Amino acid sequence: MLLLLVASTTALAYVSDRMDFGEIDFGGATVTFVLHHDHLADFREGGSRAGRLEEAKRLFNIGDIRIEQADWGVVGEVALNRYLSGDSRWDVWRLPHYAFFMLAPRGAFFPVDTILPPEYFEQLPRITQVKNERLRFDGHLLHFSAGVPDDYGHAPFTVVNLDMWERENLGDPIALYQAGQWTWETVERAAQRATRDTDGDGVIDQWGFAFLDPATMIFANGGAITRLTEDNKVVFSMGEPAALNALRILNDWQNVQGISYGDYQMREFISGQTAMAIMPMWQINPQEYDFRHAILPLPKGPDADRIIYAPGVADAIFIPANSAYPLGKVALDNFLFPLEEYYETLEEWIVNRAYDRFSYEIMWEVLENVDGDAAYYHDFLGAWWQGETPFGAIVSGVMGGGSPASVVGEVTPRAQSMIDEYLKQ
Image 1 (cartoon, rainbow, N blue to C red):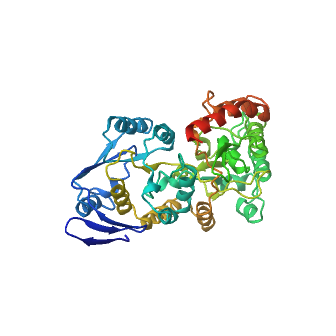
Image 2 (tube, helix red, strand yellow):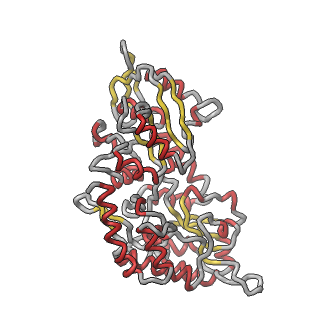
Image 3 (cartoon, rainbow, N blue to C red):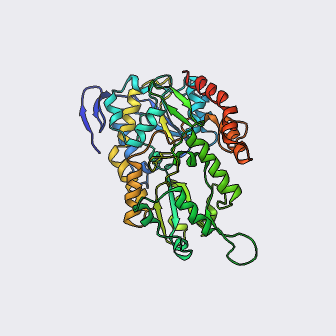
């Protein structure tokens, strides 16, 4: 852990791996972490980094560090209620992405770029920097931490069942990638050959793809749900040809050809019934597989000029707008979550999923070079299954047989209006 602590008569000067904070003294206050996933567990007795909370309390004169844990679906409301009641002055919040736009429009987040220099943010991991820039609100940066390693946990990859590819004579996916042929055309051909009735009962029981997420399809084809313009304005971009074509092809693969099957749990892939699954990193669990696997990036769509490295979205750590000591909270976060350990945890995540050198190198390549357009940061536009929302209405309309251009055209004014309202642009 890179730090420098210098004793003084009243406080401690603290230098983290990101900046010199000067004297940090909480004056005996109790700090509360509001969270759904207890990312402080490693710091308590029995954890891999036990004792760090106690050390932080001594170094920064903190009376106590406690947690307020709530379920994933309600933790945003818990944070908001604490803010509205005035109970959040000494809080630090770890929130799922969905909660960002529950709290940001209410002015509940502290703008950390008012107390941290640009150099601070430049030292954060690339995938975190991208998230920070895309989640500016009212012109300010609100997120500052490397304490949520699932920044990378939501990045999507293609996981292939090597045994099925060999058994069905689909080719060598790694060789196809190395030859520059890891494209939608290639994987569509493989999926068509893999999809069949294997036991002769007249019912298809093997498919090319498991569940295909609509947003990921759009990104893989070079499209985007929203884009950031040169003047830092967010625009709804699903009317672009790449997004429209991605939705058309998704409908074709799922509803016309029937070469994709299943839901987001990826059970058909886990059970060995699909040749491929495109899933976020956190969902890749080789211990569940009874087959050899490899990990590749998203295949290149027909409208993309390159293979797209999508970052996904994830939890983030925020400070309430009514914080009593915002700089101290950032210093505490830096002490608890040094960058060195961020990369150690990332290495561990990759090693636990990549069982060969190729997959290992691909995962690093993707995560170090993510494309900021290829993430659904502005999810107040809705999930694909929420038909009453702009994004959900588009997916529902196209998957129901509607013309992508017509469906998107009808929804675009409402979507852009929501963007302008939520982001105050």
